[in-house]
View 1: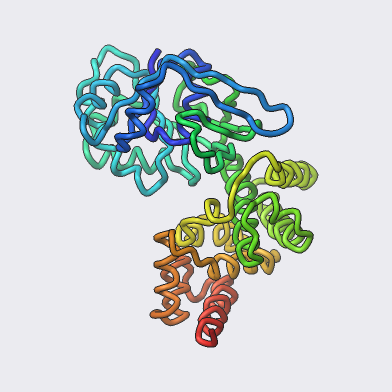
View 2 (view 1 turned 180 degrees about the vertical axis):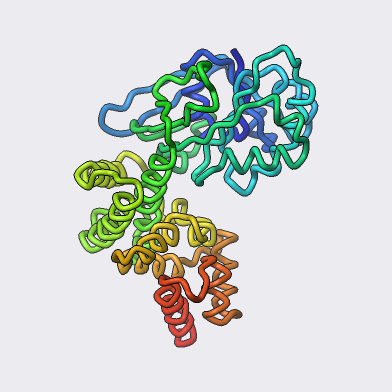
Length: 381
């Protein structure tokens, strides 16, 4: 069996590639970073270090890497004979990998089983998004594949220098995959669980793990704290993050019927993961791309909008939005763009453009006040 994975970075090697390897697949990594591709091909094994209680080292073998920028035909050849294609490239990059998948599907022997495609991104419906890009390019080629949405969860921090292609991760992981597209032919992925309805799993993860992680980063940045674990050691920050997650849990319970007691246990597990002192993670890494994280269906506005529509509390989530708007990292392109917009756009335009909320939405006024207050603060600096 063979799996092609787009995105040979830390998540690709330390999470998706690891589980595919443990499922018995030969893993072919595809990436545009030439130095990373060369480093992977210079080794015949790498180690995934699980940092924290219960963590062990796992050795990955049976892989290789292809430079998709230099050798697109080679990537297409790999896709053409693969059983599974996965990716961890970021939602905005899906349209750039779609042509390579299409090229492989065009070459694929019609007698082979359909290619199983799963996008492993921190976004709702990422595989649907990838499928749409593929259909746009070649609807007939898309018929040679099946597409399943997934919900993935594993913290992979910035890596220590000198680690080569080894990866440090947390011991915990979750990979939920919708089962219906596969029929009776489920991919071999140990530790993954296949579910009939993925929506609750995706939103539970996005609105708890991603919301909590980002809120910790932005509150921590405001307090001048560098590490995620140190930020949660601050009682004030822990209380604000916890309050935001209580609001997202109320939404999850109202929308999906999830049990409040189960959600409380899930929140506690998530926060304990963030407190792991052996997982050296920074607020700058977790806080990057604030514009994406402030968008309409993402980790703050998504649950807050649903809460406002149902008359549920939103003040803690709005406070997290305020911390996000204050995030200023000159090394992050989106942070720089957000700061430019704060200095050049009016609050009405900012709220609509950044969050996608319409003026009549019940959350609009509260978020508008956040942008206006930040602009006033910047004028006094």
